[in-house]
Length: 332
Image (cartoon, rainbow, N blue to C red; front, side, top):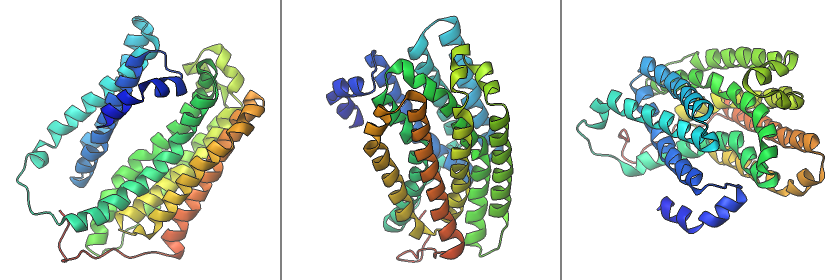
């Protein structure tokens, strides 16, 4: 169905995102399909508490894509097609390895599923996690629609470093989630959320300080010398992403405990962020390039902080309750 939609609107999509090669759009669609399967299989590995393979697959995903970029872009000179093809290969290799590691669960005997109870949990889970993902990624969609491709790279470079801060702390949430679910189901107290939050704050804060003290260093290592001009944006990105990393820990804890009262508010923050970005497009276009980039980052930082405040409110001020299933059974 999605392929038909992309086919029908291929022209406008190519024009809006300034994509010159249609193959890039279709490769991106295949990457999206892998990204749909990847969180599901990650969830199975988390549920099995198989953190060894969960961790190694995260490494394989990043390292595999990096090696493929070196081969396809640096050696073969495929440029943009090579970069997205590297992502395609990296994601799908991880999906197939994860399928093999979870084959006992995937191919095991099924059981009766309480679909109503299951939907009452999976929909809030998807929306809650999706809200934070949207806040992390929506800025690039707007930036690509406002500036030409040769300019977008100067925003994407510090943006990649800022988003790396979020990815750097993702494993903590991945380990925390099943442990919180287990403690909640057994009505046991656990301090794993506080440990994860503290570790995230320390590591994320240290990384943000490093980006503030040495903003040019990662740009010198990864990018060409002309990208050093956007070094002042690196600290902005790091500090504006830090609230989002902390929010991810609290959101993961809320969802693991079934405190879904926070979800509508998290979604509202995400929608407000998207609307604000769109409404500020004229201001972005009117401003000088670096100032406009800083405005986009500040908008991201403001809504990241708002997302953190909402998650903190429902964590400590207004904790909710685990919703009861209609027949008292596990949703499967």
